[in-house]
Image (tube, rainbow, N blue to C red; front, side):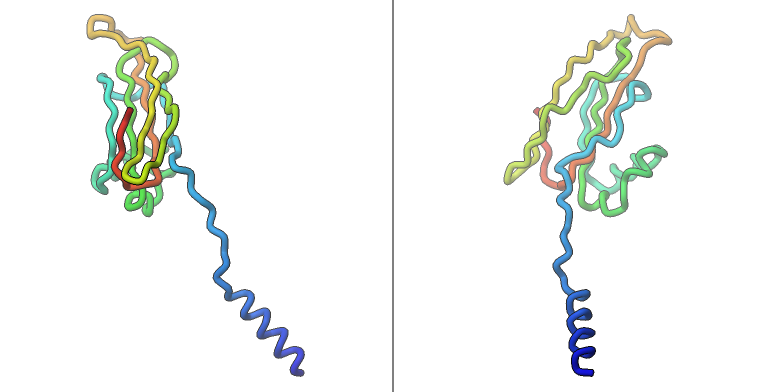
Length: 141
């Protein structure tokens, strides 16, 4: 009988232990890269405040990818390439570096933009949305 109580006690203590492993999140995740649907000017925007991030939830695809805790724990980048005739988005993230005081985002932008006189029905407006798993200040380089 004592053996059974000892085994039950050991199993109970083992199951209640707090040694669960937590997977490290990547520093950033590219949520979406779209070849059309962005704005008609080139810009990079950093969204850090809750009300700014909630505007992304209006998009069906992004609403599925952004969790409620992400709004408090993450920042988001909107990389809009502006008008182009190219069939794909050429703004790429080369690397993202986490320094003690900030997050440095290194972009490579080879998008060939159009001026206003070249815009027509075949013009595309590519954009990328990136989630940065940090609330540190973000600097785009």
